[in-house]
Image (cartoon, rainbow, N blue to C red):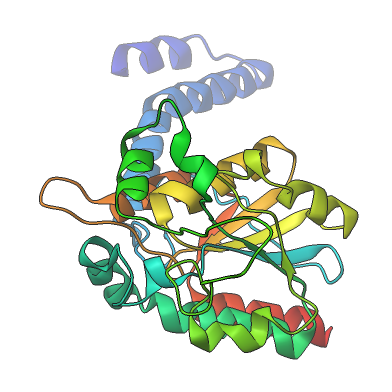
Length: 287
């Protein structure tokens, strides 16, 4: 470096040469200092607070973009998957594997908070339920958890055209949600049969209502909820997921909720907790 500068200054005999020398020196300085400054920027970024998403806290500086989700009155709706006894009640057939996640996330209470916020503001709500009728038990092939659900009689109803035995069954709504679902305004779609909305009329009902943005919650996180997120996004809807208004099965070897949380973060436009989501709903409708 010294030899280079000495050589330049030794040949500087006029103002033009001095100017050229100064410019050249600054260019050399930028080459030398630039990488160091870039390294400092990286170090500073790494030193900034960083936090992965959890059920109750949104991500922060976790290395992924945050596209965001703006609630728009008239074109945004809440979609809730499977708010049913078999998932959300200790009396339900899956409580042994989902109960821990539901309790830790406060899922039952958080779903009610979303229902209540929608009821108070007039935000539309769509419920996408899961029902199995007698003819569904005659399927010739099934996936792993389809087989399990059929074996334990999950979401069973005798027939599509009767509510016989529905009240209080595992297919019924949790009692605390009934005032919000049976209010004459909430849209209850036809049942999805596996996990996603591909097998029901949810997308049609949303489009007919002028909805293109969805706040998604419900059960079960890595099955129906995640499948609805994927299915709706594939059909051109903008989706955010309320991370503590869902829960997943946790067994000795597998954690369904953790698996879904990663995918919610990587796929949805935004993820957030119930408290922040309710505040955003109320703010949107005040405007």
